[in-house]
Structures are given as structure tokens and as C-alpha cells.
Length: 197
Image 1 (cartoon, rainbow, N blue to C red):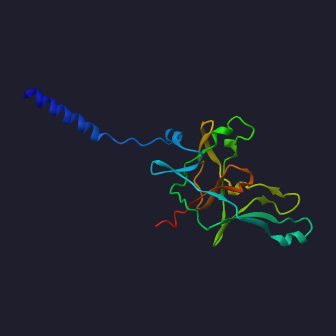
Image 2: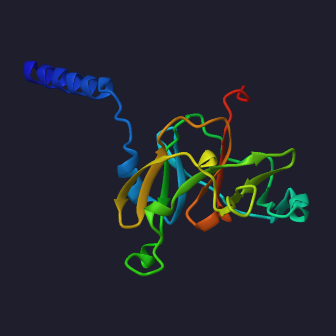
Image 3: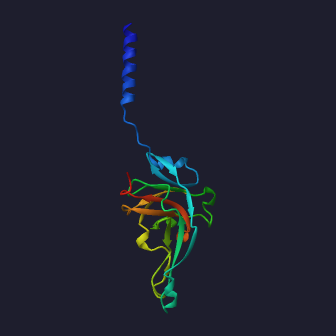
């Protein structure tokens, strides 16, 4: 009887130790190994997939400059919707891009250096991305300006998986994650602390 009592007490102590042990927080890097090809954001201790967004149109801005010698208009891409379906809570959100493993080692393989986050110009029913800068023929440049592309902290996990986040806190607004030149397609998200209820 005494032996049964000791065994029961031991089991109870062991069970109490297991129940009282703090739950371990999942590691984003380790969890990224299970992801399929795509782009994800980290929230509530898990990776969540993001929807791809492609520009819906584009055109010139400040077109009157065409008629002034030496001045240049700007090229703007347009994207549907005023707000992205993904709204992050952290000013330095964590993202993961899982590239196609079949492209690794080929000339067409994407590079972690191509990843960027660009801030949209927000309109009433759509968002815009200006992909040129400079007001005249000597200062005109194609590409996204540094004022709308924050610096990133990029951590390659393996040949096809990359974790990244803004190096500094984001400004409030709508953003595009892109891994292709000039940002014609990517994955959109928003960061709006003042609009949050």
C-alpha cells in the first residue's frame, strides 16, 4: 500500500511539473522550414500566407511637364483597393519569402538582395507607386526612391528561404513587398496604429 502511495505521489508531482512548465514560444526560423513557396508574415506565433497583388494599371503623372523643355513627367503604377487584406500590428513586422527550390543555382534564381518593401501613395479607392524620380532630364531616374523603400534586415535561412523585417519602425501606411524589379507585382500589407480599434 505504501509503495502504491509513493508511486501515485510521484506521478502527481511529475504531472504538476509538466503542467506548470512555461509554454515555449515557436521559433519563426524553425517554423519557416515547413512553408511552401510563397510570402508569409509572422503573427500570433505562426506564419500566415499573403495574397499576391499585381499592378492594375499605370501611366504618367504631372504630364503637363512634357510641354516644358527639360522637364519630365513621372511614371506611376496603380493597384486595386485602398487597404490591404493583411494589417500588421508591429512597426517592425517579420516576413518570410520562400522561393521556388527548383530555381536554386540557376541564372533565374531570385536573390535575397532583390527583396524590398515600398510604401504606397494612398488614394480613396486605390494605391499608387511612383517608379521614377527627378523633375528634369538631368535628374530623371527609374526605380523606387529611397524615401519610400525602408532599409531591411535580411536573414537567409537556406537556399530558398529568407526572413526579413524593416531595420527601423515603419511609418503608418500601405506597403508592397516585392522581389521583382520596379515592383510591378508583390504582396501588400498595411500598418495603421491610429485606425486600429
